[in-house]
Length: 283
Image (tube, rainbow, N blue to C red; front, side, top):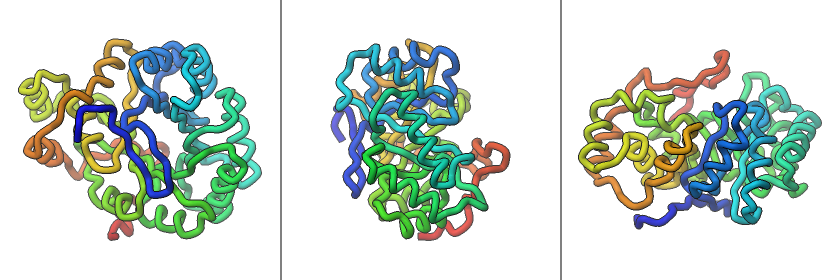
């Protein structure tokens, strides 16, 4: 892998920068923060209806003056809007707040045990057919749910977005995504700051003259078909996090970081909404 700005691609034709900028926790300074990310070089921006950051993202895009075709914008439809009519209204509201005529990737944000599965996935596909999104996918689906979504979707899925960082083993999910030509987008890539206290990561960073966050993000994007969407409100950290394209980790370093995964490594499960991740995880 060379030192350029790595891209990931799906079997369905989606192609975008492997390093993006997440907006799930940046609060009131969204426009200013996203503009700083765009100025630092990020061209893949991730938002969601649930985050409340779509207006700020849209304002930052306009303020940046960047051509729309240079950007890859993702948003998501929340679990409250999984019926077809609600799904369409949510997507249209997102586009109004973003002041865009389409997004590049639209995701179902969370599955629910009682979600109207075929209706929801059908509505997702319809948004693509209407030109409101170029590509579609899902977030927080385990393998069993992902298989089901792919089976019922009238349009090909391009990506799964899920939690992934050094403390969480996602090997089986990653292998499934690769076997089906899907991109895996890693959110929470720095484990909500937990990576900074890890001795192994600190040692690798010190040996390479890099920061811990640069090591972790490089580890993620150096894997096949993996993208990462770190977030920060600090302009300095935003720039540092983007500076991961001029070096590579050795195979031994990659293995050491993979070895940090632990059984209690999962962090995200809002209101118990996460599916049974270990269920039906065989390919």
